Structures are given as C-alpha cells and as structure tokens.
Length: 431
Image (cartoon, rainbow, N blue to C red; front, side, top):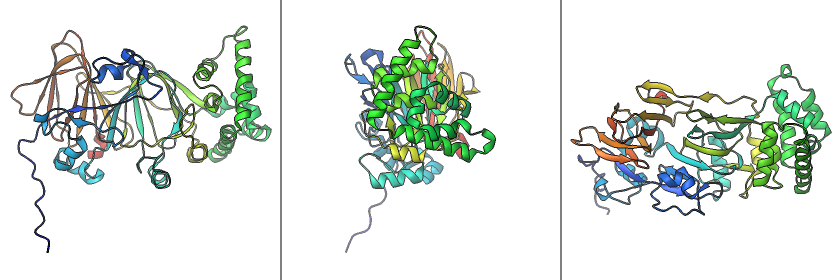
C-alpha cells in the first residue's frame, strides 16, 4: 500500500525577488553575422564568430530554446525557468497561473535580420492543434502564435494582402504574374468591385493567389527569369517602384523562388525605430531586414510557403489565410509614465513596455499582477526590486525575470541613456 503523498514543495520565504536569466541564441541562416548582429552583442558570446549568423535571442520557457537561471544564489544556477516556475507558481500570479497552467504565456525575442524570412503565417489555436497532431516534427506545439514586432532600427516587412486596387495594378503591370494566375482568375480579380461584397473579393483573391503559389517549378523559374530581365531593362529608362526594387533584391537572396513573385500581393511596410505592428493568426507576412524586439504567444508554429529552404506547406498556407485586405495598424507606444511607452496589441498573452532612462534618472515600475521579463537593450545602471536594501548592477544584455506583484526600480548611471524593454501579460487581461 502506498504511503501518504509527499507534501507539495513549499515556496521558500526567501524566494528571490528577481532572477537573472541565461537566454538562448538561434543561429538561423537569415541572421546578421558576428558583431554586426544586435543579438550577438546582447548575448553572452564574448567573441562572436564573424562568419556565424546570430538571428534570434529567445527569452522565455518555450522548449525549443528555453531560458535558464544564471546564478546559483538565484535559486539554482542552470535550472530552467520553466522548472523554477513549476516550483514557484505564485511567481505567475493567480490569474495567469489559472489561465495558462503554470507557464509563461508569452515568448520575448530580439531579431537581427540580414535577409528575408519566409513568406509565412501562424495558425489559430484550432488549426495549431490539428497540425501538431498530424506533423509534430514540423509543428512543435498546439498553440497559436499572434505576435508583435517593435522596430529597433528601420525594419522592413511584408504583411497582409494589398488592397484590391493595388492588386489590379499588379495584374495590369506585371505580365509574368498575370500569366501564372491564368486568364480566368486574372479576369475575375480585375472585374471584381469592392461593393460586390467582402466574400466575393476574398474568393477571387484566394483563387488567384493559390494559382500563383501552386504553379510548377518550371513555370515559376521561367516567369522570374522574364521578370528580372524586364525590370533590369526598364530600370534604364524609368525609376523602378519600391516593390519592384524589393523583388530584385529578394531574387538575389532566393533565386527561382515563388516568394519573389508573391511579394507583389502584400503590403510593403517600413517601420521606423519605435514603431510597431502586430500580426494575428492566419495572416501572411515576411520580415525582410532590420532589427526588432518581438513578442508573441508561447509557440513556434510557422506555416511556410516561399523565400525559404525549409519545409513548405503551400496547400495549408493557401487554405488557412483570411484573405483580409487591411493595411496593418502601426503602433507608436502610449506614454504610461515618465520615460515609459506601452505597446498593447489585441491579444491577452502579452504587451511590451519600452523605457528610455536618461543618465542619472530613476524610474519606479509599479507591481503588476502577472510576471515580467526585462531586457537591458543599451546603457547601464542599477536594478532594485521590492525590499532589496541595495541595487544590483545591470548592463546591456542583462535579462531578468520578475515575479508578479513586485515593484522594480531602475536607475541609469552610465554616460548614455539606459534603454529597457519589459514583456508582460496584457494589462487588459487583468481588468
């Protein structure tokens, strides 16, 4: 007969008021290389390899690249943050623990992009569960992945389908696409009017886009060869459009790839530093170049269909997209207190604060009912948490986990502005 169940592990009263984290770097091929990468400069790589791409810094609990505790005096060096949270669920706060089951609901990242990421979309929760069950090696979890990108440098993105008028112009002025789409679908898209109703416009767009994306390799290769030859010839007698110049640069990165042609279908956006956009489920997008802070629901599900050497799931992508034609909302952050701007997307899992603290200044960040992850992006200073008698030094690249209901103070001490980013659960979730 089994003995009595062991008591649940008690939370130690001396549980640390914040944790320093060691965070994983992803070396995807599209990343900036060596010291040129912000990810490399933020990571604990003392001497970044100039030939190696440093693409993403992951701050969170996702099993593909989990963060761990840095120092033994912070509750066990080397322990995964996810394991520490399992032992200290109060650190999440009761509402977060109840909704998301003892884990961080968000994944925080820095991206350094040298060449375009794939044409992709992230499934909604229902589709994610189906894809994960069918192909767990490709679709690593059953969660959705809404996300938000905040530009650190100029950040270029393809996102969402362009408006109907722009798409008609594409069919009229890019004969190579009209040929691949075929006369019937091209005629439908050219004749459709917005007053015909959203569903009819979507139906015509879905049909034309799917024709393009499922064309044979030979047809794609021939169309791209013709397009590049034509644009190079026309560039001698006229100024090419921004989209045409983009297509020329994408073709150099991904020759003979259908993603080069599909770029004509999407909104082309250049975010200035401090501007952000968010991307919901089943919306097509591709990050093109620049560096950004990114936050998302804790997931690594990506359905790809172009601009990639990785597995492509073209049929899934074409069938899952919403085919909405909406230019993305550009967020610029709303001031919530001196030195702090907040970016609030329409998703419960996350929000991001950006704090720019001039030298010699102090900011007090009030307790919130959920967990936070802080990144020191630039500068140096001190962090002081709750009742700590003294502050601890903090510098560029430091990452901290701060439990729910914890007051945090940062003071900037170096010659330059101290810049911090905080990821936390969306405030509206608690209201």
